[in-house]
Length: 173
Image 1: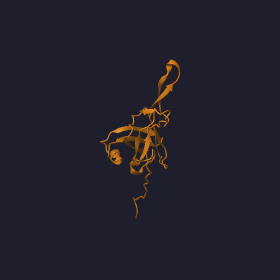
Image 2: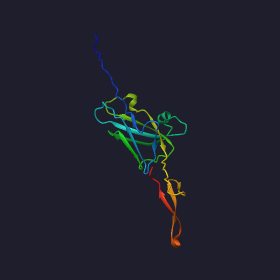
Image 3: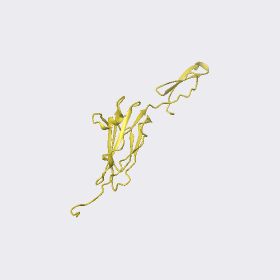
Image 4: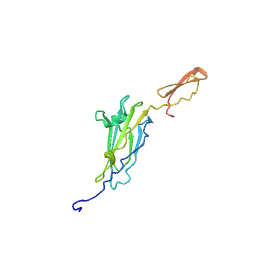
């Protein structure tokens, strides 16, 4: 007879998805430190969405997806923000080390909203690549050390004849 029964549907909203940096990519070291993280916002949520951002270092040969899920691995940085689907990682956050692999994830939450995968985005990893600079030879004796160009220029004339060494930061890369 159907008394006391009600039918209703439960729908789950898609969790955010990583956009930037691209999964499996290299992020070039910057001075001062700068990295931009972004993710897709859930399209059908009404009201405010809170995002919890988590970043972890991936130890050598470890699977990034295991690292992000496991509480044993320390969180390098976490932040909670409302309705903003980007995060600027700057010099005020913990330093990222060149040559290391990092994994990040975002969890969305909103009152009265059920998200797929508990609101967790896919995990996304990247390698923080050492900044490299190209040295443009100015003479046959140019050398570079730690992105500093040391050039040997002859000085002509009078009692000041000899060589002068010019030091400059090679930040053209």
